[in-house]
Length: 183
View 1 (cartoon, rainbow, N blue to C red):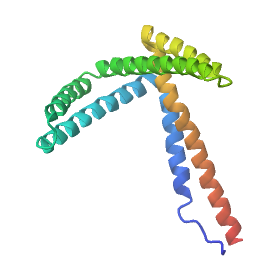
View 2: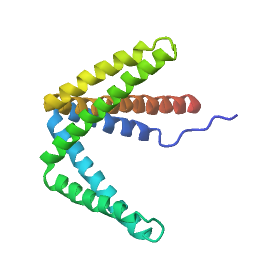
View 3: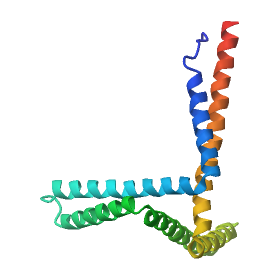
View 4: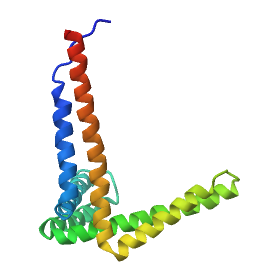
């Protein structure tokens, strides 16, 4: 197979620089980043509501309970709009959602651990320990929202930073590959 030159090797580098810079911004300005995430949360709920309204109206002759999709859609449009016009509410909602979701995951893991023990699966205690830790963390998020804000922000920044660094590395390796091909 003949080597060919990779076109636009610099595009992954550019993407990596932008992602890495965004992760640094998120780390330096966590509250601004959280507000941005909260606004995205509001837009997603609004969009979901619009889709549910369209789906319900388009399928009113197909589904007997189409009215529930319509009501859900109207509710989501109202909530999504409120979250967009009152971003602080969106931020609080995001923290509560994350906290309760993690609590649900924790209870599920703990319950699975006991099921695994009953099934005589070795290392059943791993989901038990992870479930307990997740439960504690979710409880901390719910009683101290600042923990939730910082957790969400840093759990967003970290993968962006890693992805950015890998993209830069990949782009530079493509450049190196091209230079070897030319030489």
